[in-house]
Length: 377
Ligand code: MRU
Image (cartoon, rainbow, N blue to C red; front, side):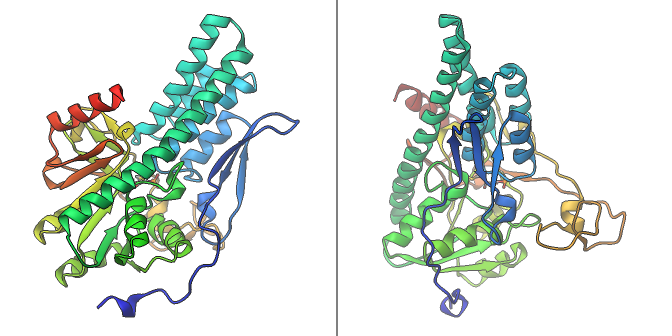
């Protein structure tokens, strides 16, 4: 089937997407973010001069996706330090901005620890602020490197699981350059398959209610000239039934010690579908997403978002009428269930691919061994 679903035009823009950068104008340091709520219609930048502005950008999903949240959080601590604000207060506000992606508290924690250590040894807040910035830049660089290594490991795993021929990959939410210091997690693997000339189709789930698939993954796939097709989330079942999916690739916001995977809501139903149809369900995430402190899936805090994201179309381009600033698509006063994430149990996950290699089958012991190896590296 496939080709009648191809997108028609080739995107000619550069493939590199400037997602986040640190700048030091004369008025003082700032963190500049690409506002992801405005994509794909507009490429608008948000300039954060303090941690509260960054907290708001995180809550509104202007900056989002697990690895990027970690990087942004680390720069947020550096920003507070460089501008002489209360670092402790900034760090607590930043790590509490969204609860599910563990990378956010990892990133904040790294920059805060660097700040504290430097302050304790020198007593000089300027030196400590520089240490926090160096920690943020290091995390940023490490994430880019991890991205490239995950892509290589994921490509090798797919070759092993699906030898020969082209691959039709289904993905959910957004896990490319927009969430990373590099080319991302799951999306980076699909991109590597594309560069090898073996991507027959990238099936892109639209990802209700905030459309990270339609707005962001399709935007990235178009820029790379990938053969992609958008589908509504509830069309995935018929696609599996037709035999048109060879593998599912998703990212993760937190992986518990037992291998339970929290990712964008709608991931778990895909895992169930994949198991029923004997299709590999592969999670791609940096080791920083594995949280040994969270024992199992039930212990993962799943963010609940406002109901208006479901009862209204909240794209900023549309005219404003509803309580959430969008056009109502349900009767006024309708209650909505709007968890941002769901949890897939480890027995439904074929493999977890990290920069340190793939874990399959997914067990507590194998994940612990992977984390230990990563600490030694
Ligand atoms: O609510 P979001 O857009 O931040 O959710 C993002 C996801 O669920 C991604 O799939 C996840 O962060 C993994 S991306 C590496």
